[in-house]
Image (cartoon, rainbow, N blue to C red; front, top):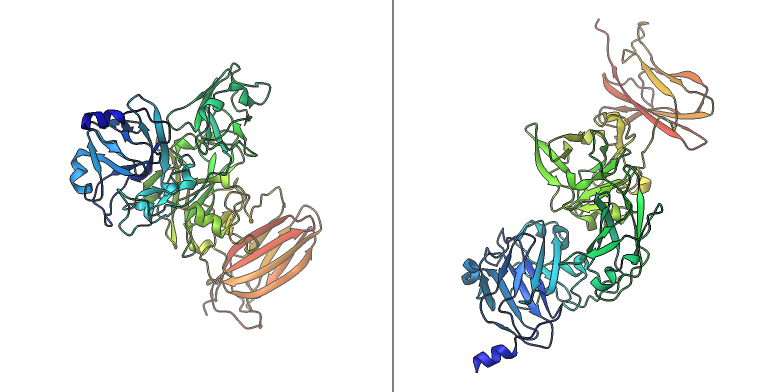
Amino acid sequence: MLALSLCAHSQDPAPYNVVIDEIMADPTPVRGLPNAEFIELKNVSSQTFNIKGWRVGDAGSFATIAIDFLLQPDSFVVICASSSVSLLNAFGPTIGVSNFPSLDNDGDQLYLRSKEGRTLHAVEYSAAWYQDPIKNQGGWSLEMIDTGNPCSGFGNWMASLSASGGTPGKKNSADAMNKDLQPPVLQSAFAPDSNTIIIRFDEPLDSVKAAAAVNYSISDGIGSPLLAIPLAPVFNQLKLKSAQALQKNKVYTITATNVTDCAGNAIGAYHTVKLGLAAPADSSDLVINEILFNPLPDGADYAELYNRSSRIIDLKDCYIANRANDRIASVKQISAVSRLLFPGEYLVVTDNVTAVERQYLAKDPAAFAAIAALPSFPDDEGDIVIVQANGRVLDELHYDEHWQFKLLDNKEGVALERIDYNKPTQDASNWHSASTSVGYGTPGYQNSQFSTPSQLQGSITVIPSVFSPDNDGVDDMLSIYYQFPDSGYTCNITVFDANGRPVRYLTRNALCGIQGVFRWNGLNENADALPIGVYIIFTEVFNLGGKTNRFKQAVTLAQKLR
């Protein structure tokens, strides 16, 4: 009778009848579950299936379920390595398999296939799916929120809410209604060679509609490709073959129409992306443009990069790091898959996109790259390095909290912005605190303090660098010379002490000629003598056209020996 029962339940299941609904990829540090990786399967159909012969796998290996097991409707089974069965079977039905795939902490591609080879479900998770920068460090499982919505990816997964770190063998702690009502988004495209294009969507597609080549069009007269091949097992990527070769250093666009996700939602407004052939980045092609290293208590660090070159850069070949004992350390890959950064584009790298978007205006969500963990960026000073796999440094910055604007009472949550990406990265005068008007950060778009020499030409010269206002006739006054190419410039000059406190407002909204001079006698705002020490002369220049420039020069107020 048992053999007949098993045979009766050996029918071929349809896709999504059984789904992967929980993943324990990084069980340490242990919370309340054993130190064992596992995946959990849930039968969301009304049928019973004998899962003997089914396979679970990732991109590198697969394991076959070798025993008879009847998976009842609305029930669960845990799949793990054979050596872990004794650790997990107390939580519910557990099957151990030989060659259980090693689950990567930062992300992996998993699939479930029937014994006939049909893909029943596949997920391509990443550390961002935890949606929690603490839990993605280990000890917590990933749980699907709505098992009736198996294709949505990021939006339908989160870290377990259970105090033990996961819920093997029972309903997920994150279980809730979460229907897929959103259309698929065409996220990116890259070309591994001049006639092959890989396009990527944010979720799996209906593979039948996705396979129609007429649903895709490439700009600049290329038109539709010859072939469109959905890529198993997730079907969120397609390989397109073009009859006409792409040209180097040329930016194309590719448009997708008439495709739907597996829930039937048709693609909407986000159906076009840029495309081009990537070229190896040279030093200073990709530069550090903004950094938040002292976030608010509920915020997150981020680093913004800018492509100042004419090359199309593949971020898969780029890494972000810091330094320890003068050596490059904590190296993190910016993107595990090919992702193109085009000339003039920005990229924000963070381990908590949600926190950054919550605290700052995110004009372009597509400009963010989520990684499992950023290198450590200390609040006082530290290093950020952009490096290639071969060890070549593209850009590097040793930042210092003293570069922040001196008048800020609280520097938490204030990003440092690069003023001119064509000036040296390590020039302290080329960095300034993000302005109040933008909420102290501009992740993913032009910096609030952005300025280039072409915006406002001119120079400010301070002489001498050491002066002694003691009325002896030698260097009693500090002279601040200005020179501009034409008239119509206005300037403000403020003197700050070494602690960043304003001690003298030398001039306000002064209309300048083509050239001239302002002088300071070493007195404060109340005409009292100031103590010897280092002072900062901060000059802000602007014109009616809205062009601005800023100059900071250090001088020393000294006293003559008698």
